Image (cartoon, rainbow, N blue to C red; front, side):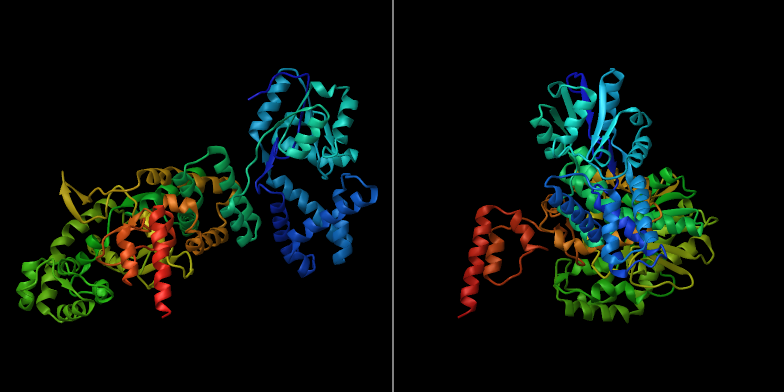
Amino acid sequence: MLKPSASFNSFDIFDTLIQRTTLEPVGIFFRVRELMRDSGMDFPSGLVEDYPAARMGAESNVRYAVRSTIGISREISFFDIFQRLASVYGLNAEQVAYLAETEMACELAACQPRQAGIAQLLGLLDKKERVVLISDMYLPEAFIRQLLAQAEPRLTEVPLYLSATHGKQKLTGELFSLVAKSEGVDCLNWIHYGDNPAADGACAERLGIKPVLHAIPQFNRHERILVQDLDSYEAYCVAALMARYRFDHAPSARQEFAYARVSLYLATYVLWILNDATRKGIECLYFVSRDGYHLKKIADAVIKQQRLDISTAYLYGSRKVWLVPSFTDRIDDEFFLGLTSLRRPCGFGNVLEALNIGLDDFCGIFPEYSGFTLESQLDPADVAVLVDRVKGSAKYSSYLIRQASADRVLACQYLRENINPNEYFAFVEFWGRGFTQACFGRLLSSAFGKELKTEFYYARSVHQSDALLVRNNFTVNRNTLIPIERIFGNSPSGTVVAYEKLQGAVQPVTFPQDHDAALFSAMEHLLPRFAVDLCSAGFYDKVGLFRRLFDWSVKRFHEDLNDQLVIESYAHLKYSNRTFEPETEFAPPLGVKDIFDLVKGRSISTESVTVSLRRSRCYIVWLYHLAKNIKSKFSGL
């Protein structure tokens, strides 16, 4: 918005008319370091590894030398910074020239127009008002003009007062005084636009100039940790995207969680998939429900932006509708894995559901269980005995194979209706053992009457590839991916429980479920946006960056639990981490019952006591700490 008319106006340059993709200038030095490593110019290894800090230190040294010599702040020479580095690290003239030229090239590549400031300046020019540019900057004037021309050609027509040219700074007020004298302007009739509270604000105001300051984005704690941990130019660019999104849109907690947190799990994964799939010549990617919903949204946005020659489709499937129908003459041992790995008692009905058999049919095969009801509870040891009997039963095997044959009819028809076997295709899930893929592969071959290679993408799978089952893995990161499953589980509908035939076509059967609609909507819109923003920043094919971001974000999950953004957007999401257990919130608020459980030595139902306490009423928190103190005192007796 334009301010009241004035006869004279001045604009700061950096963060007012142009901005860096790295947000902070130091990000440029990380890019220079990367280029130094590949330059073949034999820079000292210590300088290369510490270059960002060394570059900032050299600049600080030169500024201090000038200030302590003449007793007042004066602008330094850009090239003096590199002479300082040369004197400390023994650099030759060619190396010094390389560092200076490379930094300017990186500045040019990283600088982009700040449209709000440029629009304001051009509006004043259109009104025939007088405008000048004033900047405290050590870069050469010819280079600054090059940056301005790149941002907006008309900026080169505006008079430029640069501290590097005149040896005076806004920060001391001397550059403002020089402009006043050169332009013949009364400071009381002068408006200055900038962002720095000291140089653009207080110093201008002391001379009677009216400052108009604008805020600029700053890294928050999460973004600061990102750039510190990844220690790279690319990390600064990614953190800058997040900071500018927050600054420009003032998002809700769920929107920011989607754009800046969930995106590092999902958008990075999809970008890797697209790079790999297009390199291989894959023609169609099938995204498997439910994990594939948001992944497909991301892929479609990037495919459109990058104009990739690849198509996508959404495939409804699940363990429930693919495993049993794939059994033709035997039952895989892995089918029983969920039952043999139980750690807690479970209902008899849950066991029968896992075995894909009803109560009457089961008791007909195993009469010794006739006294059981669906509500009967079985300990893990009891379940293990039951599974051993089932595995050794020819009658049960025959029963399940017959059931598989019946279910296979619709499953195969669904695949034939939705998959084109004549093109090069692959399937996208998020993570798993790879057993579902093995079952799906058999089902796919059965559907088309020929042996087909089944290629899947995973963030990480347990099983590796074989001749017919190709498993492309994104990462070898060992951190658990279960927390991300809770995010996928936040969906308007549950998993596919069956196929049915409607109006001549096979359709999936799903049921609606409670979910956080605001978070789901934020993910629908902002995950694709983040991916597109990342590609627009020039990172579409930076597979190494995607992997580092993914691994970092997965590792950070438990360290960020106490972050208010996570507490508001994630702690309430429901999911079941264990077989047959009901879905519960990640960290529900504690109640009086939990305090009694604590006193009696029973575990509290939460994945994070710390987060649950943050969500609990004050008196519950007080009772919790009181109970902990009492238990501590008695345990020491």
